[in-house]
Image (cartoon, rainbow, N blue to C red):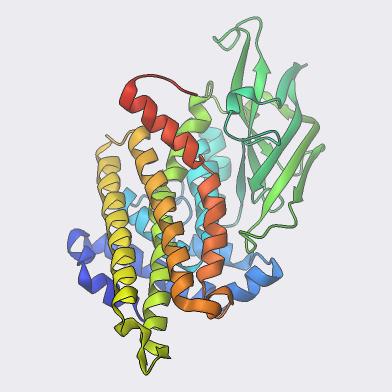
Length: 398
């Protein structure tokens, strides 16, 4: 499609970006258009994840690009967001991969890991030679991590992990899993007393670790999500992330991933808008292009408004993040708005495309299906509404 420059020209976003930020965006757009778009419809149909693209993403600097040191690019928050936007304009699965690898697994090690852990894992993950996953969500539900049942118990000079996780991206491909488990601590050795949530770095080759890809997905079919079981998985003391104590550990990483979604969902929305514009100028009904009708132009204008508002909100949040002042509630505003509006745009675009909109000749139904997953993970709509409700009233309704 060739409509992105037309959309960009109406509202000159480039004028608000630095040269470095524009370069990151263009690099991501080229990769998406040249390496993902030619194969994504077939990959979605065949449920195929292209493992070979991981190394290419690493070579281009996209993996953990917002982190500093250890082979990471050290790019700004806005540059990272723009990359997420362009990757998700191709497919949510590839932005999800970058999020899981960089914003979840790598961020957990970077934020909370020891020097030895960082040196062991981060350079290879940044290069795309190693893949990580982030094991938090459990089969009974993901919105209440405090109720997790996966446990780690002291056994001699190490720990034994038992339990299960579900919907864990990349787990069957990963070399290392960041596993969150409830540690019984009656002696108060960790300073919490009773029990506490701790993070463990578990090589996926460890006996007792089993990751099984989830089949039957009608969404995110070009990416991998898994069930994990831990059956007496033994790790040494040096597997514990020393800087993560309690749920603030995983939540700190989730906020990184939620930030990427704020941008990414607008990429999927832009792709749907581009399809609607293209079809409205090429399809003729009653002797003229359907885009010459007032109702169609009104729909396109409304869709465009929401894309631009969403991108400007993302840009504002990115500048706050770079200043170190971005709050979790502000991230919830962005995640809730971006995904909600992207889904609405996808549905409007499908209507404009009429019957052809349900085919893979256009990316709209694929984006709509993927966005249903994006709407659920990293906090459902309801969770973000409750976060904002608490912020507005000072009352906790969880």
